[in-house]
Length: 402
Image (cartoon, rainbow, N blue to C red; front, top):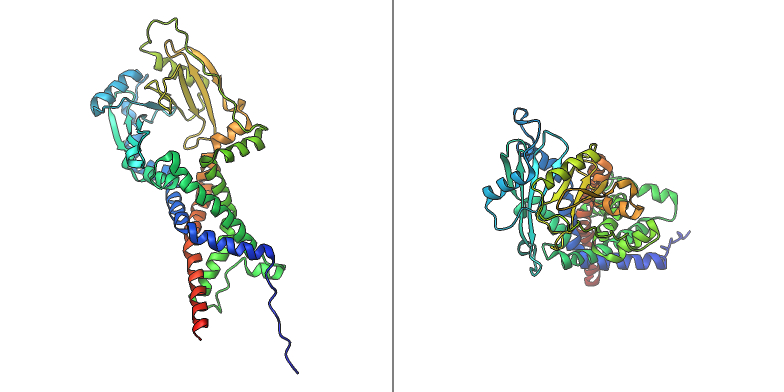
C-alpha cells in the first residue's frame, strides 16, 4: 500500500506577511535594538548600585546632625566657592530623611551641539552635609557610567532633541516585530501550543535548533513585558503617542496647561531666607514625602527666567510617579499654589509615572528584576534571530549547489 503523503499547509496571509515584516525589520534595526536593549538593561539597577557606591557621600554621620540645617544660600555659596565652576548651581534636592545629605546640582546644556558630550556642558552632583556644610562627595555625572548609558538608550549619544527619533523609529519597528513574533509563534491547536511553551532538549542535539527554541520561547515570554517597555519608551519620543495616551486617560490630547503664577512686584528685594522659607513650608505640607527639589538659578528647563519658585515634591524614594507641585513667591517665600498628586488628572498621573513604568521601578524590586530579565532577552533576540536567518540562508545556498 502506498503511504499517504502529508502536505504542509500553506501559511495564512497574516502569517506570511508577519514573517516578512519580522525578517525585514529585524535585519534593518537589529543592531539598534541590541544597543538600546543592552544599555536599558544595564541601567535598571542604577539606584541600587549607586546607593552602595555612594553610601559614604549620601549618608551623614550621626554625631554631625544638629537641630537645624544651615541656610540653603550659605550652603550654595560654600559649594560654589569650593568647586569654582563658571556655571551657577542649578538646584538643590532636600531629603526628608535627616540622615541624608542635600544634593546640589550643576546642569547646563548647549542647544547648538549635535552629540551628548557637547550638548551637556556640565552635569555635576554635590553631596553636602546640611548641618556643617561639609562636602562629602562630588560626582561628574556627565562622564559617569549611568548617565552615559541613559544617553545611549535615549538618543545613541546624539543630541537629545532629534536623537530620540533615531531611537524612537526603530522602537516602533521593534513593537511591530514583537506583535508579528507572537503571531508567528501562535500555533493553530492547543497541543502544539503546549510544546512551544517550554524547552524540550532531551533529543535536540544541534545548536541551530536550540538557538531557534531560545528565540521562539524566550521571545514569546518576554514579548508582553517588552511591549510595555517599548510603548512607554516611544511615549518620550513622539508627541502623538503622548497625545494618544492623554486622550485615552483623560479625554483630551493635551495635558492641562498650568497658569503661570507671577510673584507680586511689590517686594523691593529678594529675602535672603526665601529658600529656607519655601523648604520649611514644603516640609509642613508634605512631611510624609521622600524629598523635594528647589531651583536655585531662577531658570526653568528651557533656560527661561522663572516668575516664581516652583518646588517639585517626590512622594517615594527612588520613584517619580507620585509627584506634587508647590509654588512660592520668589521674593518673600509666600505660598502661591499647592497642587498635590491626588488632584492631578489621570493623564498627568501617567505622565509622572511613565519613567517608573519604563524602568520597572513602578512595580518595586520585583518589577526591576522582571524588567532586567526581559531586557536581557530583548538584547539576545537580534542575535538569535540573525543566526536563524543566516542558517536558513546557508541551507538555501547548499540546496542550489546540489
